[in-house]
Image 1: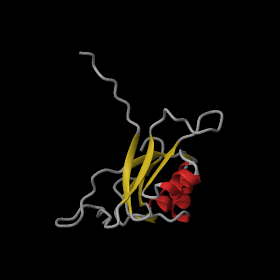
Image 2: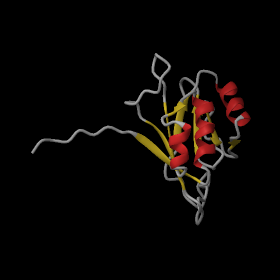
Image 3: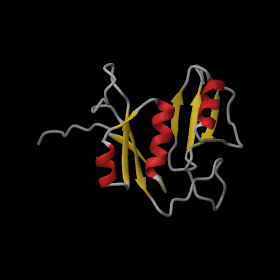
Image 4: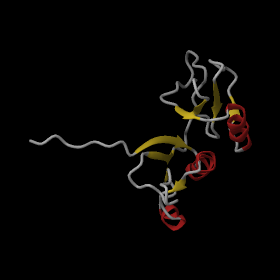
Length: 139
């Protein structure tokens, strides 16, 4: 028996509005939708975004983010609190200018989390409440 090959394709985030959350990450990361608007309309409960390659086209082999409709999505609590919805995962995004990156994320609809754990890291909550850590070099 041969050993199968594994490749991480996407990290999936639940969302009440997958298209809107995908648009946030497209604007924040400079990525693009994997599928056309017509393809997305055929399955509005699932949206995938991916980085672009040097040619400006979506890199189909790169790991991306997917957004799945969850009508009953409950945003996680950050920092964690007993009895509250717990964070299952979060995204870490490296930035070259922390203050400018935070300002851009807030402009796009993120919210600054009330608890900030480190000087070189800023936790923002995306429009669906998922924690997103922006970190400067050395953070």
